Amino acid sequence: MKSELRDLYQEVVIDHSKKPRNFRKPEGANRSAEGINPLCGDEITVYLKLSGDVIEDIGFQGAGCAISKASASLMTAALKNKTKAEAEALFQRVHSMVSEGPRSNVNPEELGKLAVLSGVWEFPARVKCASLAWHTLRAALDGSGAPVSTE
Amino acid sequence: MRLVREGEAPGSLDVERVRADFPILQQEVHGKPLVYLDSAATSQKPRGVIDAIARYYLDDNSNVHRGVHLLSERATQAYEAAREKVQRFVSAAHAHEIIFVRGTTEAINLISQTYGRTRVRSGDEIVVTVMEHHSNIVPWQMLCEEKGAVLRVAPMDDDGTLRVDELERLIGPRTKLVALGHVSNALGTIHPVHRIIEMAHRKKVPVLLDGAQAVPHLAIDVQALGCDFYAFSGHKLFGPTGIGVLYGRSELLEEMPPWQGGGDMISSVTFEKTTYNKLPYKFEAGTPDIAGAIGLGAAIDYVSGLGLDAIAAHEHDLLTYATEALRKVPGLRLIGTAKEKASVLSFLLGDVHPHDIGTVLDREGIAIRTGHHCAQPLMRRLGVAATARASLAFYNRREDVDALVAGLHKVREVFA
Image 1 (cartoon, rainbow over the protein chains, first blue to last red):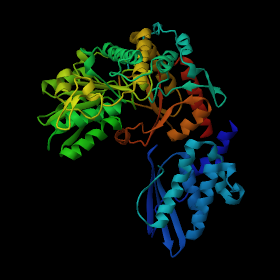
Image 2 (cartoon, each protein chain N blue to C red):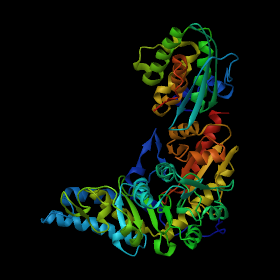
Image 3 (cartoon, rainbow over the protein chains, first blue to last red):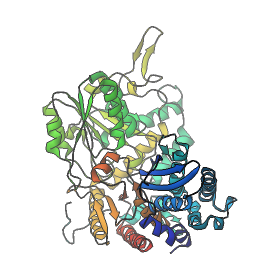
Image 4 (cartoon, rainbow over the protein chains, first blue to last red):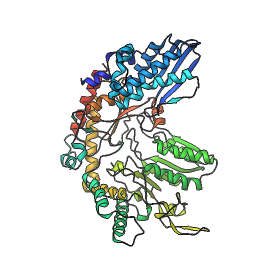
């Protein structure tokens, strides 16, 4: 297989897309937001159980491609028990990595499992797939309740 | 689908010679020969079209319908000659029934904003089908919202065949227009439009056909069809983007108020009163896309030169070949298997999302469309979020289908 394709569809990505973690509405969820990608019709809802400033639980539901599902799944795994500020910081780094690739200042190795999304930047048409869950997370954290769109 | 008999000749079209006329097809993408299977989104342009546009800008560029100088005369002549080519291409009775617009979307909006706004009242109904492209849904929704009218939607069978009986039941005393696609962009279904027009006309209801996906594949005769309006885009007919056609029957166009106001659509203007120009200029405010019209004329010349019969035979052979080949790919499900189809194949592959299919195929040099195809209500009806769609034109060949099948095996490998 071509190396860029392998970079995009790493085993962890395929695994998370087929068996998404936290694919549920957590009990006691008190924040949620919907995200859509109007270009492809992908839809996602991110649920948070916020306790003060801490994300006590997080889950998601929806339909999407392998990249968007894996990104959402990995995101939920990474953010449990993190503070809002930590989540925002991680959003910035992931967003920068998937949209700018090596031009960004982000070292994928410091992002743990999320590093598997580092190949996305080579596929400009797929950057929105990887970032949909993260934009939706931000909306849920804001608590504005307005649906977010990648457009 | 109609089947070709064993051993039947696939038509008299010399694909390799045709392909030589399309410079864009002679390239590699991602290190692989380009396999372009997205002609339903936009078709490629033969050199003759590109040359005609260049020649206009190199030699004749000038504004139409106003100059006394030679260039303006030449530009006007070329622009009006393009209109006559369109007239002959769709067998319209008069050249002034051909209105140049930006594309199918603009044509439908024009009808909605003129015919629709003057005829449709509160409680009236517009009938469409569940298979429509958004461009044949949203303009009617906007009109219905403004007028308090109702949009009625004809259903289909699971295989993508329109329920003509149900459509007929929807046409009632309050129906002001039936607006439907001639060929479904997402599924390829060819609707029995002649029958539908007859049935609507029996109830004195006019019919608008969205022909965007039909004109590249079928010979169109608007008089034989008896349709009241027919809309299509140049860029899906191997012509340039930015130019399209609205055909309307004279009697209807005459009665309709103008849409946009401006230059070229007037006979005389004073601050007290403006009188409008005659057809077709009444609907062509502002300087038109002259080069686009000329390019479309060249595209029509090209398609007519190949012959729509030869094109249809070739595409039918390809569709049959592709349908059989795709059915053999494990886990592949064709979406839209109506008996009468244009060369469009929508499909799903196991539980792989169409976008992922599209990305893997792209790296193999294969261009397909993935997503909802601007037909979200249809996707909802099918219970899917999106499909992958391969659409074939006369410049495609069996090798392109073989490449697609090989690419799909690659997809299965990646997502095994």
